[in-house]
Structures are given as C-alpha cells and as structure tokens.
Image (cartoon, rainbow, N blue to C red; front, side, top):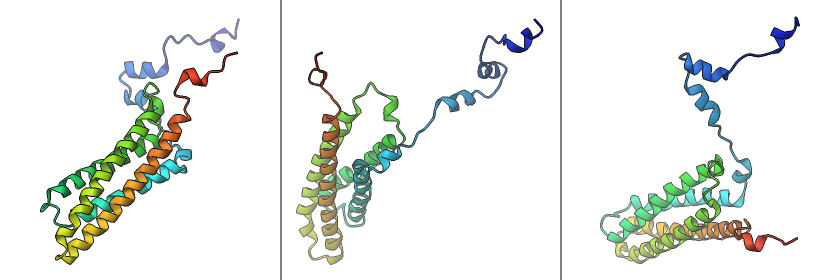
Length: 188
C-alpha cells in the first residue's frame, strides 16, 4: 500500500493540453504535429533529376527571352507566360514531393495528377517552342537579339524534351501504381 501514490498517475488530460489551458505556448502542439520529412530517395531518382533539369533549363529559356525585345512580338508573350508559369509550378511540385507533402493527402491520386501535369506541360512547352522558333527570324538584322532568341529556341526545345521524358516516367509510375483494382486483384 505504501507504493500506491508513486506508481499511479491521476492526470486526466495531457500535459500539452494543460499548458495550453494555463496560458502556455499554443504553437508547441502545432509544431509537434507538423513534421517534415525529406524524401532522399526521391531526390536521387530519375524523376527528381528531370525536374531539376526542367527548372534549370526552363530558367535559361525564359531568361533569354526576357532579356530580348519580347514586347515587339505577341508570340513572345505566350512563350514567357508558359515558361515562367511552368517553371514556378515545377518548383512548387518538386518541393511538395521532396518534403513528402503529397503523402499527407492520400485521397488525391497524385501519380495521375503528376502525369497529367507533365503531359500538359509538354504540350504547352511544345506550342511555346514553335512560337519561339517561328519568331526568331524577325530579328535577323539585330544580331544580339537574334542570338538570344535562337538560343532561347534551342532551350525551349530541350525543355520540351525533358518535360516529355518526365511525362513518360510519370506515366510508368502511374501504371505501376495498380490504378485499376479489378486487374490488380488475384482471385483465391
């Protein structure tokens, strides 16, 4: 009987709740529930490397166009819109995957969303590349701008190829996911 008070806890609520109720730090509970995990396996994978190449080559593409007289032709407005928008979305998607944010929302079919994103990005970048390549010869007499826009056309084609490779690998990931439950179950 002498050991009874030392072995039994009579607390009815958690210490974190008591601290909050007594005016403690209310952000402590939020910080413990929000944990970030860096997915190093993704960082070393082919899709991650392709996304890093998309970001780097896409930045070169839109920087070359932005440094030229892009306001003179309306086609370059489309090219800049596509290049900058996809560049930003790719950076956001890369960090969402890297920090495992997508795994915290399992109700969304992320493999299909990533596949559709890369497919749409490939089509949009192809249209931007064609608009860029078709508008380069308007600046043939202005050698500096011509060189910038020709290099931007090359990087636009390269970025289109990288996005298409990402679309292919995300398609393979989507198909390997077992997306159709009827074909992935084996009757016993």
